[in-house]
Length: 323
Image 1: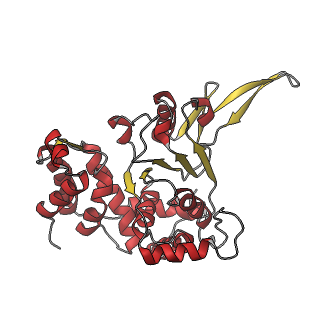
Image 2: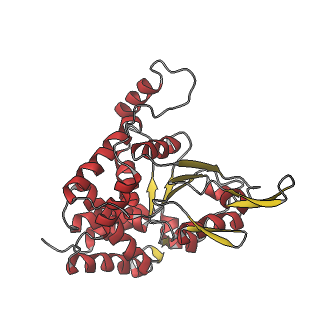
């Protein structure tokens, strides 16, 4: 059983986790915050960015900061579902079938370039994400909590990729965009990465372990129980519903979008030190919670309007409740 945790202690641990990850993942404060929001909410993240921006480093640093196990899968066109979940094999010496667990049995899983694997393998991982368990040789095995998948995809290189269907995209709580760092941040990153290090392996030695998995589970439980006023809940629903008939959006968010808004906002409230969810928490997580749940209209594509710009306009026009 998870030991209880006071709300003030949870706020301090959340900030400590952010500070430790930021020691090595430099210049991407919003990416760190949104990833932590998803972690506290118990949801998965689709991370989109070009190669070389530190996605693996982010997951390794986060795993070390809370003493979690880390695993990585490089998705390729020939990757099979058993390579993700595990399989059983016959051992000639013992005359028995042995079970080999796949890399999904970890607290943090980096699914690198998930769109390079065929649909059958993508579905195997996404089913594990949804159910929280793996079936091997007819036996269901639960994954060790907490369990968070960070799946990455390259937004530029599309050759040899398999786009994630909308129904599968909807299983990610947030879609986080990672961009190039600012000049000062990139300079600090280069200085850190080249300071007496041999080779280009970026280690997380500077990251301290400030929480254990039991404390993180308690933080998730606290986040899930943070109060949400009816007006704030209604605001989340109105945002999701507004995407369904907004100019420039052909397909809007379903009810899962509003659910994701409230869940992620609770994680954000915990990180921000709030005792309850504010309208600003909903508004802050809305782009990441909705951008993969809507589709531009052909007219918006022709005009060059991006989903982010359409959502920014929606957030500016849909009235938030006043405190």
